[in-house]
Amino acid sequence: MIYKKMLGHFGPQDWWPIFDVKSGKCEYRGCENYSDRDRFEVCVGAILTQNTAWKNAERALANLSAAGCLSPRKVCLARNLAKLIKPAGYYNQKAKKLKIFAKYWLDKSLLRLASGTPFKKGRKQNLPLCKRGMRGDFLENRAELLFLWGIGPETADSMLLYAFNRPVFVIDAYTKRLCKYYGIEFKTYDEYRKFFESRLPRSAKLYNEFHALIVAWGKMHGGKQNRAAAAKIIN
DNA sequence: TACCAGGTCCTCG
DNA sequence: CGAGGACATGGT
Image (cartoon, rainbow, N blue to C red; front, side, top):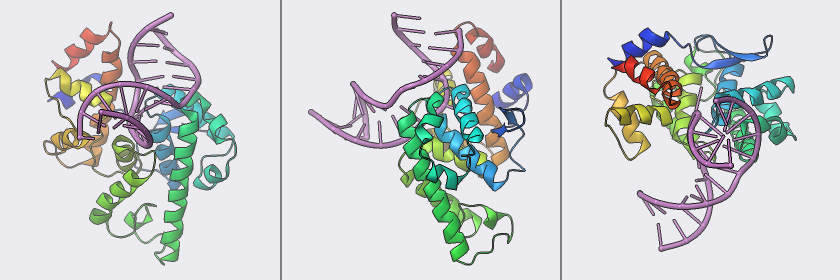
């Protein structure tokens, strides 16, 4: 299986990278112990890295962190958001996307409080984007996220998988490249997603690691010089 | 200098 | 629908 070959070569990736104030860089420490704040940050990162090298998104995160803007409220209030995230590119669009998403987050938080759902009444309900039990809202949330301007399927799925630990397989350019390498191509995003989800055990942990490995492989495969080496890993 | 990077939206046929 | 363009910075 390709997964095992990649895992054997690259080792566990411990996605998603979370910004560490002390070191001033993003570090990998798995997603088991995320705070609400961490989850928000993952979502912000997912938007910032749209069609952009992660390194640039990371710079933008560093600016946000330095400005104390890594909370939904601060993002909503910030006047200089576009300036802060400039290194991530498309900064005007992304500033708008972040505003919309942060407002959505706040609204959900308020709704949760207003509906009388206690803040800590079991882990699952503690997730900001949940209203009720788990199964149902996970789909509902995906639809809700997709409804927001600036959040497409990949960004929504990255949030669900990497911030909220939901079993959704994320499809990105690298994933498609990997498929193409094997002569597999589909038209729509969801066809790719179903392809993986229907062939793998339904496990957030597995999807997390697999997609992270695909990105590691994809980065290697991207450069012409390393292409042969990348091919070797999965052959 | 050209092309790419962990996409998404809008417009036009 | 599907193709084509806009959005923008930083690395190689």
